[in-house]
Image (cartoon, rainbow, N blue to C red; front, top):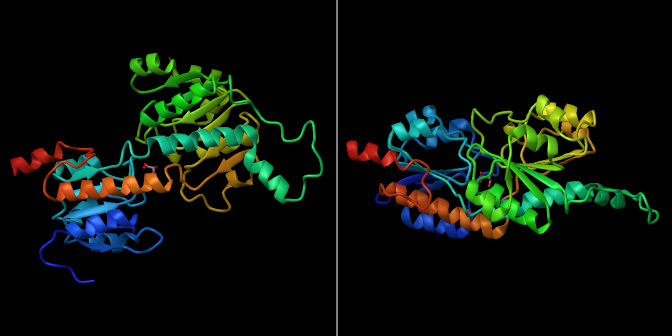
Length: 334
Ligand code: DGY
């Protein structure tokens, strides 16, 4: 495809829902990577060379090397709420606005976290395989016994928007809810009837632990071997946040030794999890391919926000969700 002349040039690293693509095309001279996998690094680096804007996914690494190759870049619009794939400090220093897609996916992701809690507790994936495997011969008093979700204790690690949305669901199940978070959320405590606790107490007292913290150097392997030792042997761990928040090999050891009951992971380290990864040899583990936000309506909303962040950033404006509004100051100083 040839670049046009009047509209700002942008690169889009994956085909997004149509309405958003139409919006991008109507405002920009957009080149779109049509592959199912991320563009290879060299392709990405080549294609940002003369663009003013980039729409990327959490699988694209946006670092100083990429920014060096893109001297005209004004805005990077990430099609995700998380932005641990982007060096935001570096972008801000260069006056590059970073957009993300918060709010749009909160409820959908919370639905999925709760679905994993339910699936793991009631062994739904295992029961489905049991039937398909021809093992179902009769109704059995001890067949596939699970754990009750209602009236149990839920531990939430990271009480942002999604953690709070999970808490709202848990209230409907009459769960006692503990949370640990970088910042104590007293208003949520009152509104949701939840209790703040140190991480160790959350680990020791929860029947279910669900992870909703962002990934940063401070949360990398936040849950490691010593933390699994503190959990109940009946504890079920759910992660829909970022894989590296949990040390997967320590989790493997804990699951294998029966130190915790089960894990349900929508995110892993690495992603994708290779087919020969030790975790996949375990029966007390459910894994899904990072789809917690994957409903048709939510992905459409995310795409429209990503398009609007891009378009606003191209004209030096803040979009609906800008991670680093302070990057604009760089423009006024220039
Ligand atoms: C995000 O947005 O950060 C999710 O992980 C994917 O929707």
